[in-house]
Image (cartoon, rainbow, N blue to C red; front, side, top):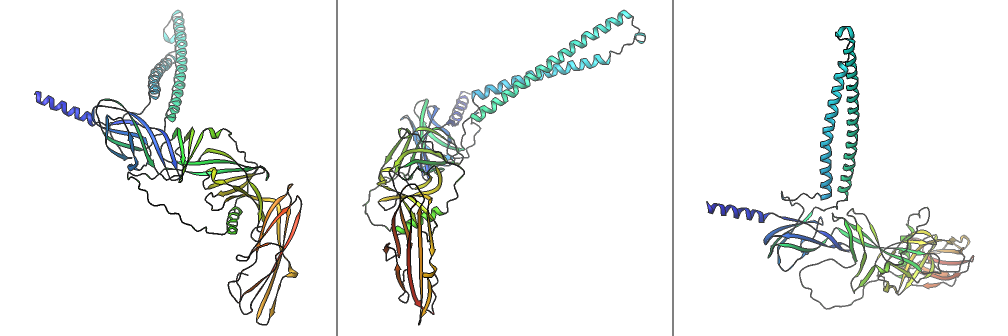
Length: 535
């Protein structure tokens, strides 16, 4: 009998030891990369001595299991770690908070009192119905004397008044109880909504603990369910002042848990972590292919800007925080830039973009206007930034606010091989440009077996601004790759000529209200039995 008792006791102890221990992991910090996030949580587990199974709730809906790191005292040994979204156990406790439980208990008590009040009111109503049914007492038919009849009338009147008053009192009590229950239900809904959103992800830990007690845990891991991109606001009030740049990060996260008052770090590095020690190899430098010439870079930039949707109704106001630099620490190495933000943020797990201000920069800029009337009938304003590498800029889109108006978007590419960063500040409609064919100086004629075509264009530019501007104006004449096609540049009006590309460039300074007319003319000669498709 004693042996059986000991066996049962051992089984009970083992069963108790197998019961999982659920803990809630509170998110403390997030390092967000372009393609992932490293989350750090803290938790506290009350553990017995010996082996235990810990289920850590409120981790990301998906994470890289191989990147999980558990920080714990030396008395705790982590035997295994497993990530799951399908953990089911009858041991998982009720997560109702004490405040919610108190509200629910109050509602239950009030409902019991409401039931009693309703029952009492119904009884009084039945009593009143019975009195009204038996009040038809007729003198001669009842066999009662006048004195007895008067006593009956007085009793009926008093009893009916008392019953009616009781019904009114109980009805009022019912109303107040229903109102109280409704208020508590509203409070319960508010309390429930205030509860922190928890994810479906869980970490299941098998651990061995030397001594029973509370054990603090630190949990970190990588998840691909968050990202950020750099974004900029560029504001220029006129072409004689620096550009005010607001350096921002747009964060998107769908980890399944809302980040409340979390410490944020934004990094341009790669979040690939593994357990293999890195080995340095030889570092060889080599030249890369720039990909396009200076003129093509301008053309590409301006072509992108030419598709910008029209600006909204009204000005965009940027709220500048002059003290933002106090809250953001920028760290840079050869491969990455990180922004440590001291101000805690709330980033909800809704997949929407959350904007975080990183830095404010005043960019000294020199401005010039740029126009290629052959391709685009409007003039663009370019801002040129020298020594831009010191600003830790990353590639990203930028809003342009010029002279108080939204002017569209541009793209900042700090990886350019040029010494100067050129930003397109949008179209400037106050600088007009026109390209017209001069009919009497253009035409075709046939010479023996050849056809000769002459093309002449006038380019007219006018500065309608109140200040002098520098304008780079470009046009071109065709280049031959066939010996049967002969091309002669007849007139260039003192332009700088690139004979390899056929690009003509004029550097002009236009005073307020000043206009200039320039002319380009060229001749093409080729066999008359052939056709040039792109002339």
